[in-house]
Amino acid sequence: MRELKDILGDGFTELVDTFLADAEKHVGYLEEFVCAGDLTALERPAHALKGSSANVGAMELMAAAAAIVTQCRSGQLVDPAGSVARVRACFEQVAPLLVKLR
Image 1 (cartoon, rainbow, N blue to C red):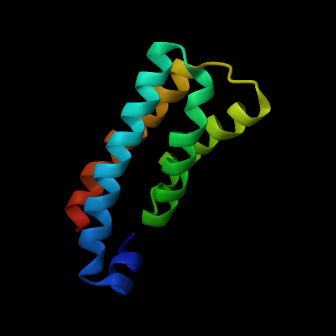
Image 2 (cartoon, rainbow, N blue to C red):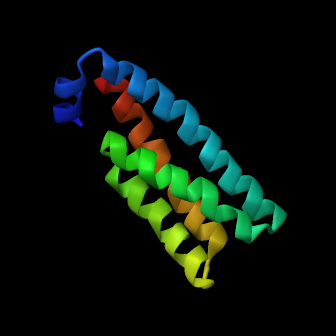
C-alpha cells in the first residue's frame, strides 16, 4: 500500500476515500442479500469488492470476496453468512489502516 501511495501521491487519498465508501456499500449489500436469502445476488457486490480491494492492496479482503465469487459461480456457496462475516471482518481490519495511510 505504501508503494501505491508513493506512486499516486495526492491521488491516493481520493482512491482510499472512494474505496472506503464503495466497499462499505458492497459489504452492506452482501449482508442484506444474506439476510434476505438472496444468495444469487451475492456475486455482483463480491466481484466489485474483489477488484477494488486488489486495487488498494487489501489482499485479505480481496481473497474473502473472491471466495464468495468463486462459490457463487460454482453453485456451491457452503456458508454464506460465514463468508460474508469474513468479508466484514477483513474490511473492518483494513479500513483503519487505509485511513492512517492516506
